[in-house]
Length: 223
Image (cartoon, rainbow, N blue to C red; front, side, top):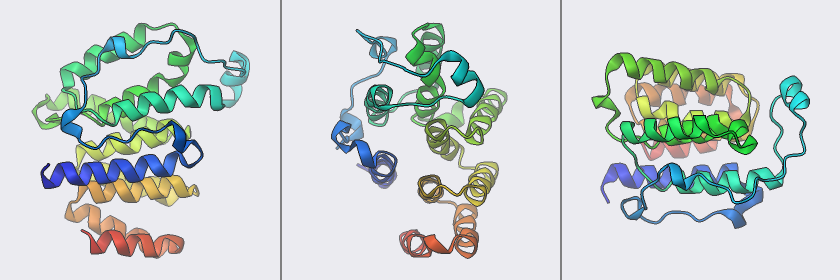
């Protein structure tokens, strides 16, 4: 495992532990990204649709509200996604597949799953810039939509771009958010990006997020 893979794995473990403190018994953390099984359309199936007690009208008015019966399978999928790497073409194949599913669970959680999948794409630099810009716009829109599960996945996906726009967007999210989980994830993502611009952004956050100074010092020491 090279330095980049080791850094990615460390980030994955920290991220999953933070976003699922109440659901640790559902988690199976990968120990080697290279050993992960491939993911395909067939990986996203349910013998029985999870019980969803929120009405469609409530969802329309107040946004998606998830309970344990829905969160449990969602985390199972996210754990599996977090253990793999895919190509852009593989991502698009799964995107088409998930878009066609009429199961309400997948309709409600499609953005979470697809954005998480996007964060696992390897060799994104080889993708056409026009296509990449379109994908980035989708990710950045989700980054600020307020759904904590979608935002968490979008933080990871934003880090894939590793450019100044990604760093600025993550910094803005951390500045605007009062949720500790979101700020933690942004700091982890900036550390994963690892550029000088990301380091400067982390230093800037230190002055406006005093509760995170110790965490920020740890990240800077490990830069």
